[in-house]
Amino acid sequence: MSKVIYTKNAPDAIGPYSQAVVTGNLLFTSGQIAINPATGNVEAATIEEQTEQVCKNIGALLAQAGASFGNVVKTTCFLADMGDFAVFNAVYGKYFVSKPARSCVAVKTLPKNVLCEVEVIAELG
Image 1 (cartoon, one colour):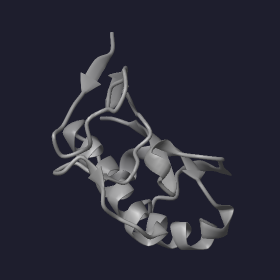
Image 2 (cartoon, one colour; image 1 turned 30 degrees about the vertical axis):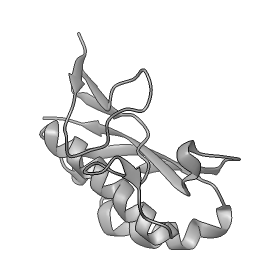
Image 3 (spheres, helix red, strand yellow; image 1 turned 180 degrees about the vertical axis):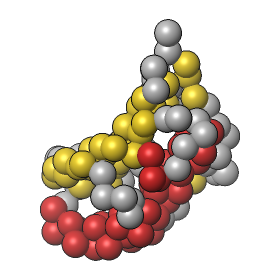
Image 4 (cartoon, one colour; image 1 turned 90 degrees about the horizontal axis):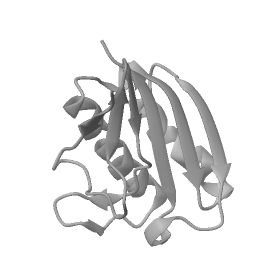
């Protein structure tokens, strides 16, 4: 049976989905974008600022589930512009020091016209 994970320290879902779900010993997060959970708005403008906010949002979900970035086994990253790849990696690398498996693709448009989105799978326990 799945368990829904919710925290006020990450943005509320902007659609009919959960922030994250635990099934068995795995945590699956929904894609996180650069929404400031305190305001519900995208305030960050640059790829660096947006990636920082995305990672903070992921960190809040991981913490709520009793995990940390070290528990992450897979990430899927979406960039609005592959030209941001190196800068995105520089910020991403500060958080995902355990170097989980990863996919990173460029997409045409992301929700709220943000520059990046990241979802993770983490092993709990």
